[in-house]
Image (cartoon, rainbow, N blue to C red; front, side, top):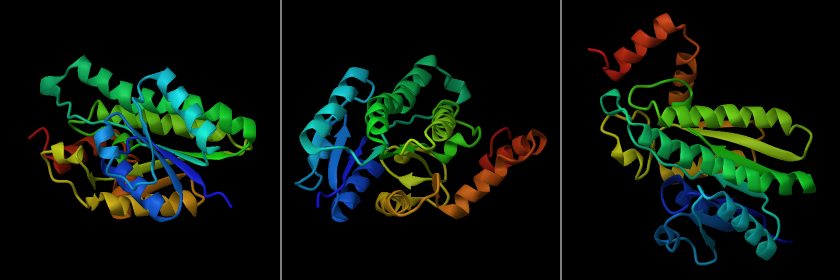
Length: 248
């Protein structure tokens, strides 16, 4: 019996790298993509390495076609590639927004555009879009990053409705703070931060065994943020200022 095939973007470091290792450990065939090939070379020897700039629509389409031509249908795609930079109001630059939306949103959209016609045609397949709890509501210093993740959440919700009954199962993953090269840039406390390998184990279980639409973790943190976004603005803004120390 052929082992299932997973394609993971953003796999050269952080969550993507840990996911590639976890799926390989669990017996899956793994196709791993990232812009920088250096980190990919540290993955298990049998990993299918597909260096790729996800912001190039044509290259993404060609990569998906090449993977499937050589290795068969992709059973699960984890669209994880993304980047982050703080965008405080004192250094508010359109270029930062443009970069983050190009990678985080359009990099994911390019993957979806390549995958959806193939999976819909054969009536099966699973796609996981990796967003973030930063997309739940506006947080100081994350006006660009949070906006990209909110866009991913909204888009994935819409696609979930449209794909019902098609055989294509689209999922949403919203991690909290995970120790990665990106979160190492943060200069503020990160409550309940977990290691990338722990995040990968949770995602593997959810995406291969769970049936729910959204995977979010760690729950003690994510439930607080879910509750926060339900508050009226007259309570939300003072509470966020208090929690983050902004506006003092």
